[in-house]
Image (cartoon, rainbow, N blue to C red; front, side):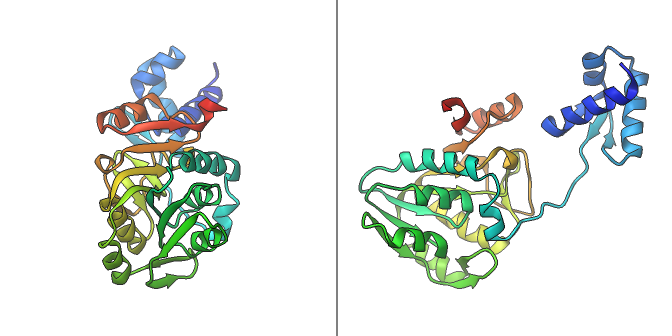
Length: 254
């Protein structure tokens, strides 16, 4: 195999696992450690990796959070499948919290069970307002116009009065660093939502897995269930098992 071919394969491995060791390159391609190091030097020159002691990792890239309307168009099929599975977990008469993420909005749009919904999302409140089975409590506070959620001390104070069966939470990233997103004010509301629920489900498509964003609002210990669209890596599954997080994958069903 030529070096150019190996570099493509190494990059593909990194895109999935985010890190690779010299030993792993030797194992995958049957090359010497010196050859493996030269491959990593070449990739570093191309700014495709950051070399570490014994291997390399992907360089950090700023995670752009698109506005709400643009996020609704991204991975719509995956979000629909995740939302459908989440909606199926809601029982008649349940009291639930739905946060302001677009994947959780997909759950709301497919909800057909009589229940009480607490939310800080004006979009979700609007979707459910035409449904006779949904009893809605919209948390009042300051409006974040771009991402269309309500936040602030009044939202957190109001949340303190509610104790619910299930909270459905979206993320920008879920990793060994817990649940993260870009906006601290949104994260503070989500943290309180998690605290008020008996069961917490995270709804995240496969692009969110292994990602760490700016602000951590919960740890994996705070999560009971992860619903996603593709089977994560074995390493990530082991991480979930370690923290007693159950995994539901819509891909397995389809």
